Image (cartoon, rainbow, N blue to C red; front, side, top):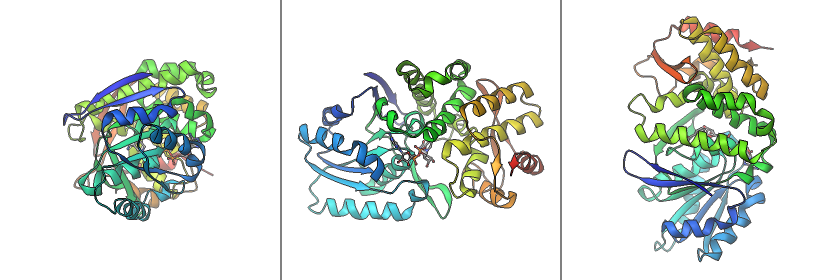
Amino acid sequence: MRKIPVQSQSGKKYDILIGHNILDQIGSYIKKLNVGNSAFIITSPRIGKLYLSTVENSLKKTGIKDISSNFIPDGERYKNEKSYKKLIDNIVQFNKTDDKKIFVLNLGGGVIGDLGGFVAATYNRGIGYVQVPTTLLAFVDCGIGGKVGINYSSTKNILGAFHQPALVYADLDLLKTLPLRELKSGLAEVVKYGAIRSPELFEFIEDNLNRIFSLETKAIEKIVIDGYSIKAAIVRKDEFDQKNIRIILNFGHTIGHAVESASKYAYRHGEAISIGMVCANDIAVKLGLLDKSLAARVENLLLKIGLPVKIKNHDINTIMNFFWKDKKFTSGRNKFVLLNKLGTTKIIQDVPINVITNVIKNRFTK
Ligand SMILES: NC(=O)c1ccc[n+]([C@@H]2O[C@H](COP(=O)([O-])OP(=O)(O)OC[C@H]3O[C@@H](n4cnc5c(N)ncnc54)[C@H](O)[C@@H]3O)[C@@H](O)[C@H]2O)c1
């Protein structure tokens, strides 16, 4: 088992444990944390069917017998206030006697991780939680960094908090049941890490796609460990996203989130980010920041993975309405993370609106 220790700016320390076929040992690692003796598990019916009994049995074996398992249907549209309220009702009910030390255990992808993390951040002014990611996207991105939240009134992640987990427990064997479309969606975030911080990781993906798609142990370990390490290093320096460091993780997200919301989540998160990255590169080329050939290289890799680089069935006004709701914008001024070279970025404010809308429209397809 590989351990990546994370220390946040606020001094909070936790470990990311990465291994193969380790889910049945999770109880013993949680027990050591002293995070609680009553487990409030959040998962989806599909993921629960595959992995919940292994987690429950492992907890019971170590003496954590007080368990409440809660199900939220699959899909981004359930990362909302209704699911949040349902979970809060359930946790209040679970804590009827008021004498428990409850911790939350999120077993799922980014939707469960964000939603369950927000429950943990807000219930009783914050309780401990454990992330057990089950998608590639959650392995490399959502499990760590402490950003948790829900969508509200169609705006992505508009209600949220910073709340670091007590443990991230990553069993890479869980990827074996992940649908191919979800694997590709997760790879978009790994491409992002390569583009913004690691030319070496970017080249590795270019050269090893077949090994990644066949879930070859070493190749999967490489992209997950690199992804975690890059994110952990960034978050360590700027936990609360205030120093213009963590913002670089938003490469591709400015237009990506708008496209994702405008599509009513027809695009998977990583698919929308793929579109967002090519749009950001188009803008960077227009502004003279990025070489056309590098923009083409990034686009080719996304296409080779099978990710979308064109926008289907959307109108520009809907996308721009969502675009202006971006949390990073202040006083009506837009802000973009743009690629400069492979591995380096620039933050640009006030990109002319006609440049943005033309870039998006040029990416429309039937
Ligand atoms: N907090 C953060 O830092 C952060 C970062 C990036 C993305 N996110 C959020 O993550 C979300 C997207 O997460 P996602 O892409 O993991 O999607 P997801 O959570 O919706 O999961 C995708 C689908 O895969 C299925 N699934 C998950 N694991 C499986 C497995 N092992 N086997 C079989 N099926 C499995 C799920 O049931 C679901 O249908 C978005 O809401 C995004 O905003 C958060």
